[in-house]
Length: 107
Image (tube, rainbow, N blue to C red):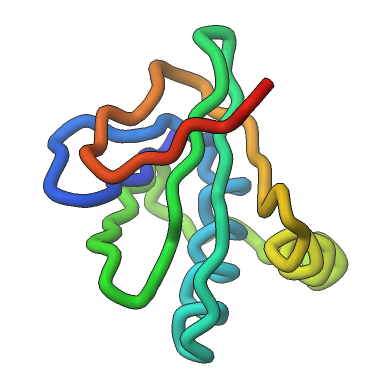
């Protein structure tokens, strides 16, 4: 299991390594093109969204040493989702992120 850290918050969002690798690849591709987007994580504890933009401080840590294989079709679907008004949604395996600049999403 990996973790995505957003902002200067020491806590993070727990995401399985394979999904995290795909999220990281999508984030890097979008930010290289200066295309901000909404990222929502869903867990048993609820749902939380963060606005990903070129000034975001992001860090990813992985539980496994090996790099997960990236699936081109999955990446393309995730990039398409980033362009929707609701943004990209992924499942989180742990507690929500406690970042300062998170956005509330209406249920």
